Image 1: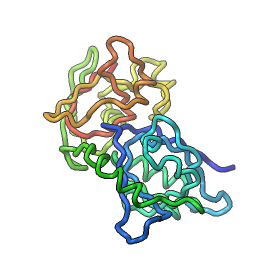
Image 2: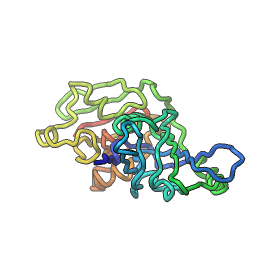
Image 3: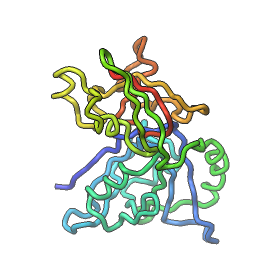
Image 4: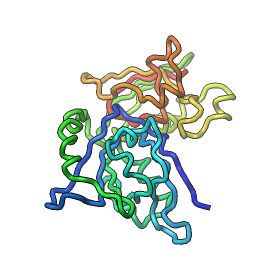
Amino acid sequence: AQASFSIINTATTSSTTSLFMSSTPATTTNTLTLQLEKPLGLILEESDSTIPNSGVIVTQVNEGGSAFASPSADKLSNAKITKVMETDVSAMSFDDVMDVIVGAPSPLEVEFALAAGVVVESADVVAGEEETEAAVVVEEYEIGTTVTIQVEQPDKPSITLEGKVGDNLRKTLLANKDIELYRGLKKKLGNCGGGGQCGFCAVEFKDDSESGVWGERSEYEDTRIGRKAGTEGHRLACMNNIVGPATVKTL
């Protein structure tokens, strides 16, 4: 059976979607490159289950992901992902492609080879490109930059961590054995392992950067955390890659 995977386990600082097309003289193309925020909202499966390392194709574009907000969302069905952030994934296994996507920073650039008969009009892309590019938030910190994460815990001293921009917040917290991200037996035994499903890795969150690089939490986090009074500043650690300094309080 073909494997499938929903890209929902990493989050982002905004919901901007940008489109980029090559400057070839042709008016149509069957290759599409999108700059997408996480979560992408793509359901993927192996391109050909009978051929090892055949890459992945898009079987569905889910509402709520950044791909759904793209003007080209209706063209992605059965499209094959060929590149992720300049990494050729066209001949990778399903699991290897997932690793590249999950490990990539947000926003990430994804190249699609569209299904036979599906083309993109260059004029249509150019018409919407200026507006979408203007909305892209330029992050203050480059990938790999070391930033300070202040961790506050109930009944325990605060801990100051050094995290790297681009690393997953949940993994960074769990790497320190003095931090109890999952408090209580229910959270320890019932957590989803960073899949963005259980909500048990929620932390009270404060952006410590001067320019607010963390942005608003994602719509998907809203659905998992809810909008109850007192939860406005909560984030799911598994859904956020580090983009700058912050203070988090375990719950």
